[in-house]
Length: 225
Image 1 (tube, rainbow, N blue to C red):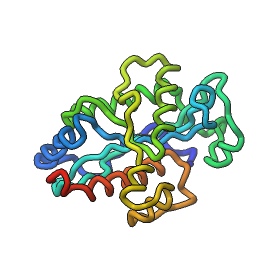
Image 2: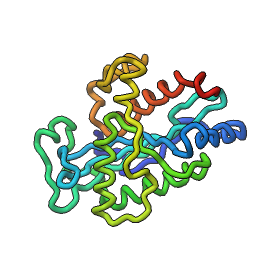
Image 3: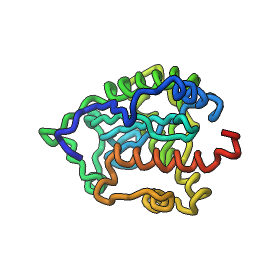
């Protein structure tokens, strides 16, 4: 993690949607029963969502391109301050390489991170003609638990994500590629994996998004797209 990176980013990975692509993007609602899949990854101070700090939050939005393939479209990343009284497990921090109290770490309160993210999610939901977002993650229950716990702590009333449903790429990759470990699944899908970049919320969300898109695209013939 670079301490010089912006606290929050909304970075388009492609040009603005053309009229054709806009029409294609609205097909998202029909593909996932009205749900908008949003790939989310969190980095935390441990494994207990009620006691351990949320330290990084990243999300990748996906859209159908003109050819009908699902692909990553844009992303957001937030560096988050540990909430007051939160636990920080040294072993977890060693894995992620995060120093929560580094003087150059441009962190914001988790309430601000969530509100900013949810605002962007709602925009994507509206643009895609969907009714709600569904979290996509590798071992997604972990990310969803931490997201829900942060929502409860901050008292945010309007959460665009489904409270308990999620798409788990560990399960999906096990079916599609015979691999459940993220690094092995990504490699099996034909993408590069970097051990040095892993355990950054943005990197993990981006590679999970590529993995999810590749699995969805493999099943295009089933849905007639």
